Length: 126
Image 1 (cartoon, rainbow, N blue to C red):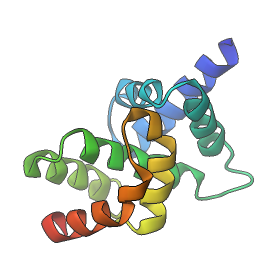
Image 2 (tube, rainbow, N blue to C red):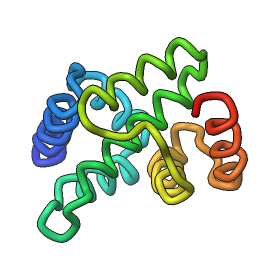
Image 3 (spheres, one colour):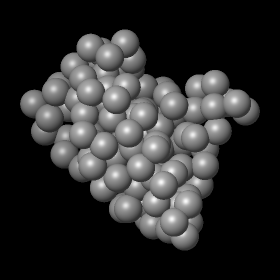
C-alpha cells in the first residue's frame, strides 16, 4: 500500500517538475482515476525503461484531464502555454486522447467521445 503512495508522489513530482506545476495537481488527478486505473497510470508513467515516451503519456493525460475539468478558453490556453514553455506540444492526437480517456474513465471520461473531443479541441483551441 505504501508503495502506491510513494510511486504516486514520484510520478507527480516528475510530471510537476517537467511542466512547472505543483505535484498536488497531478496527485489530485490520480486520486480521481480510482484505485485500479490510478495504479495502472502510475505503473505506465514510471516505466521509462520499457517505454521512453511514458512521461509524455502522463503529461498529455494530465493536460487532457485539465481540459475536461475546465474547458474555458483561458484555462485551456494557460495549460497550453505551460506545455509549450516546457518543450511539449499542446497538440494532441487520437492516441493521446484514447490513452487519457482510458485512465480517466472513472473520473468521467467517456471513451466513445474521443473523436468528438479531438474535433472540438482542434476547432476551438488549435
